[in-house]
Each structure stands twice: as C-alpha cells, then as structure tokens.
Length: 270
Image 1 (cartoon, rainbow, N blue to C red):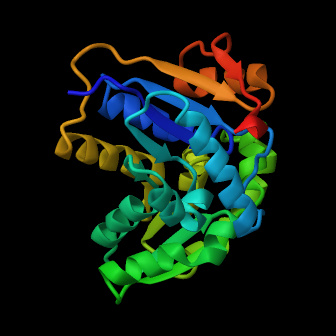
Image 2 (tube, rainbow, N blue to C red):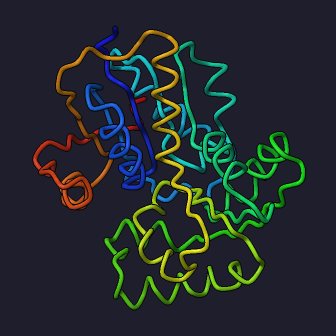
Image 3 (spheres, helix red, strand yellow):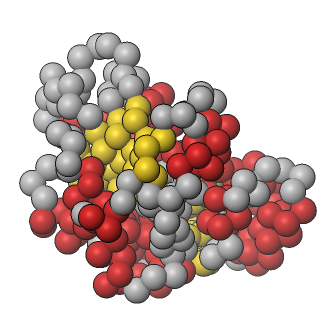
C-alpha cells in the first residue's frame, strides 16, 4: 500500500478527463493536478519547447512526494515521454500506448482514425505504436488545432454552432475513409464526445485516451504494490494562469466545486 499522491499534468483543462476516469477507477488515490494554462495549447509548439515545458511540469509535480505521473497530454506523450522516463525513476505513464492497444483490439476494418494536435499527428507516434501491435492496421490521422482553444473557452457542448461547424469540417472527410474506430488523441477531446459522436455515428467506436491511461495506471500501481489504502482519495488542483477561470470550467466538468481550491503556480520557477 502507498498513500502518496499521483501527479497528473496537461496543458490546461483537457487532463481533467483523465482525472475523472482515475477518480472513478481508483477512488482511493490522492491526485495532484497541474494545468499549464499560461502556455496552452501545446499542440503547435516545437519538440524542443515541448520538452522544456514537460520537464518543468514534471519538476513541479515532483515537488510533492508523488509515486507516479500520468502525462495527460497527447502532445507531450508523443514527443517527450521517452526522455521523461529516462530522466525520472518513478513510473511515468502516457496516453498513447493504452489507446493504441484498445484501438487494435476494437477495429474490425483494420482502419483506425486519429484526431489529435498538429504536433501529435506530425510525430507519427500513434502510427508507429499501432504498427508494432498489428502491422495490418492502417491509421488515418487528422490534426484538429482549433479543438483545444475552443474547449478551453467552454465551447464544447452540443448545440454550439461554432464547435459543431469546426467539428464537421474536421471529421466528415475522416468518416468517409471507412474507419470503424476513432482515437481521441488529445485529452481535451473527450469533452467533445457528444459532438463528435453525433457526426461520426454509432457505428464508429470512440476511444478516450484519458480513460485508457487511467486503466493503465491501475495496472501499474497494482503490479508494483503501490495502490492506496481504502480511504477516500482527495484531489488538489494547480494552474499556471487564471486559476479562477480554470476552476469554474473544472467544476462544471468534474461536477464538484473546485473553483476555490485551484492554486496559482509560477511554472517558470521549475
């Protein structure tokens, strides 16, 4: 048993999709969440800048006595995860590998769609990961750069003309390729599940990368005897900019009041 918290980070709000899944699957775990809201979105950044940001995010989380880190950011998972693992001795989990395993398991047409940030699509990490699992599976990727800023501004609900228009432009050509499975390769995107599902239709399976990462965390903690004892877990939230705004959106998504508990962080100190 290990009561130390799990650290989770993302460029902003999106990683809360992973937090929600972790709290559902692992209700006894304590969580420290950091949203780098001063530098969101990460998707258009260079590999060098992304590694710098990721190192700072990890350094901040490690200022707490954490036992593992979930990189709840598809962009960092595709560009910086191997380096972060080399530089840190504790378990660091990303969202790519678990989502890819799930996609290969579900697809029948051997055509898997991927929507993600430009940096994630450009990296080719999802394609190479799936190729190692099943070389016959084709991955058709689509960068969706407007999704993250729209979600960060609360534009993710069905009926919102702006997000629905953007989503149709991104997704309708992808649907026509014959995919039967779609990886939501950025943890912001599960907030758009209803919008995406309406466009893609019920015949296309949607894979929540944050949820798959949460299951991977459970397997990792169980195999290393680091699960927390059975007591109610707590979550603490930190943001590098506009903590009140972050807290308002987080409260809506997590369905609990976190607006007063989000603490500001000067991430440049790390």
